[in-house]
Length: 219
Image (tube, rainbow, N blue to C red; front, side, top):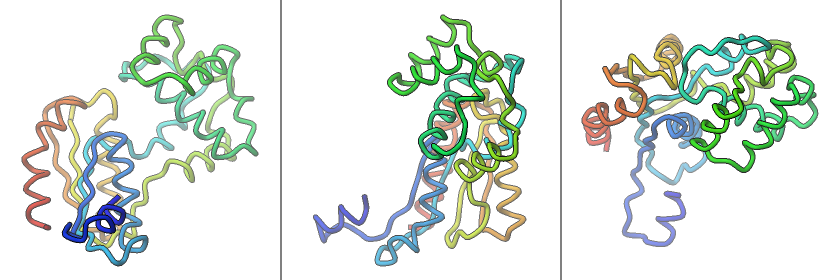
C-alpha cells in the first residue's frame, strides 16, 4: 500500500510504520518481518501489534473431540476460519477427516459468513470445538502444517517492535502474547511489551497513547 501510494503521489513520505490490532496485529508482525526485504526503497521504521493472536499453532494442539467450552470469545468461529484456511493452503492434507459432519457443515458456513454472525450461528446450533473435530489436531502432519501456516516469526526483524495485550483478554489470552514477546526477546529482537487492564477490544483503546508515542519516537 505504501509503495502504491508513493507511486501515485510523490509528495507522500516514504517513511512508514505498521500498526494493527488482533488479526491486524498478526498481519502487522508478518509485514514487519518482510518489510525491508520486500520494499527496500521505502523507509520502514518499526511496528506496533496489539492483541496479537500468536502461538495459535500451540493452542490448537489440544483441539480434538470432547474439547470443553473454556469460555473464550468466538473460539469456535476462529477455529472454523483457521481450519478452512488450512484446507485452502494445504489441499494435500486430509483436513476433512478431522471434522465431524456438523463440523464440516460449520466450516462450510464460515466460507461465506462474517465473524459475529458465525459466532451467533455456533450458539444457535450448539457447536463448539469439541463437536467440530472428530480427531485431534495434534497429529504430526496437521500440526506441522498449522505451524507453517500460522506461526508468527520470532526472529529476523530489523526494526523495533511494540506489543500490547490486555491481561483479562478472553479472545486472545494474554499468555499467547507474552510468549511471543519472550521468544522475540530470547532471539535478541528489539521489542517492548506492555500489559493493559482491559479485555480484547478495550485494551486497544488503552494502548493507543503508548502506540502513538512509539510511532512518534520512531518516525
